[in-house]
Length: 189
Ligand code: SF4
Image 1 (spheres, rainbow, N blue to C red):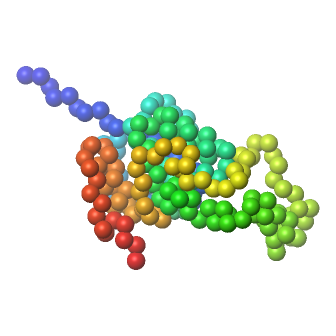
Image 2 (image 1 turned 120 degrees about the vertical axis):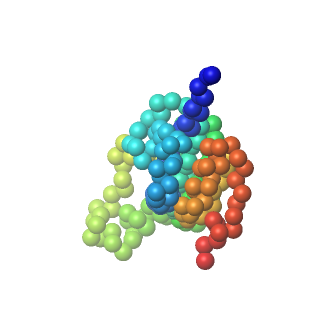
Image 3 (image 1 turned 135 degrees about the vertical axis):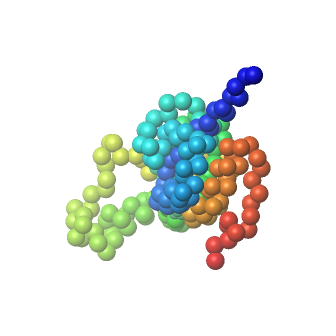
């Protein structure tokens, strides 16, 4: 009699680009199902385990937030390279979300309001200095949703997507089953 091989755990990576970490909070809101999750998957690069660089190829990448600066683009491109399946999680990743409100005006006008002309500038930045440290990521002309930068396999709607939707999606992705999107998982009122 041969012993039954234990199926290998899927490997997940997660990141937050121009987002607020609310989507990661929603992932943690699966509560006690976290114990089931760690039976199913291993985490690689993610703020959840503080692994900062990919150490292996991943099955699933979860991306929160869109691209507001060149570092966001770099991280998203790395996720596309290292993750077989890439999921845009939440409205910021799907269509730019709140950070994309700056797309309503040119970048120069945003910076002028924040650092030169805004009502708090006299107290907080009297010399009207624009941030110029070379280590700071460069802002893009606008905020880009993830699918305009790399190809995305799945989109999970919501701000944030509910914990139930994230759980259902992860179980479907890990098991290879099709996700049945139930109305309760994306109805917000
Ligand atoms: Fe935060 Fe909502 Fe954007 Fe998620 S979709 S990162 S919860 S603002």
